[in-house]
Image (cartoon, rainbow, N blue to C red):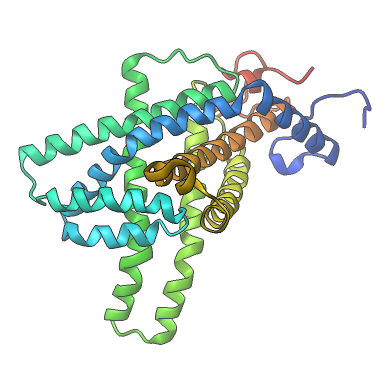
Amino acid sequence: MDSTRTSSDASRPTEFHKRDLKAVARRTKTEIKNDNLGLLAAGVSFYAFLSIIPALTALVSIYALFADPAQVEHQVEAAASVIPSDARSVIQSQLQRITQSSGGSLGLGAIAGILVAIWSANKATKGLFQALSIVYGEKEERSFFRMNGQSLLMTLGLLVAALVTIFLITVFPALVGALGLGSVAETLSTFARWPVLIGLVLIALATLYKFAPDRDQPQWLWASPGALLATALWLVASIGFSLYAQHFGSYNKTYGVLGAVIVLMLWLFISAYVVLIGGELNAELEHQTTHDTTRGPERPMGQRGAHVADTTPT
């Protein structure tokens, strides 16, 4: 192996040598600092905080078209079990307000309300799109219509994923029990839903890394490593922060009635940060190889429409 080389010709992430992975890890750490990832995550988490109520409104309104909206409160609370308890209390109070005012009928007013809620929730998605463009070394040049079209589709996809999550966590085990399939089936349905949910998170993150940055799309296999890392970090960080806030944090003493809101914003910040770290890893893995990592036929460097695919480390 050439001791002076700085890149590889790997056609997939699993083909990198140990030296390549060490170089990727070093550059990922450097880029986290150079891209001011903390500031990017703070911006994304701010827009996410503003989008929580519209997103919950859209979720409850869509759910109410098929079932009793009062049920969604309990089901969303169960689905949000990984969120710190203080942050959950903020979401629970808003859910109570939304479910009490939800009619559950498909009229023009309901449709208009859902569309307005989705449009408002879309701000967080657009913020994440722009942050990931920075992470991938791209200049955001999408038009108003293209940006909003792509981000609205992603927002709708995330709402559908949230509905599927609620179904898997709460409705599916109850359905298995009602069908009388036996205690073994009930136990399996209870435990099997979590790997399925983790799989949904992986798919959602890989989809985000593939479509969010303003560049030619990477192949799925180059969008997946960051999704794996971000999912693992998110689970560990969420559980760790939840335990810290519950047993060691003093947010309520410091911030008073705003303590629960602060916990929610910090959890959103942590979530945004780990998602962006996953993007940094993907970007540096692509940067490490001279092989075309974008979709479609093989193209030479400089013609791939993506900074990290068109350049190599110096």
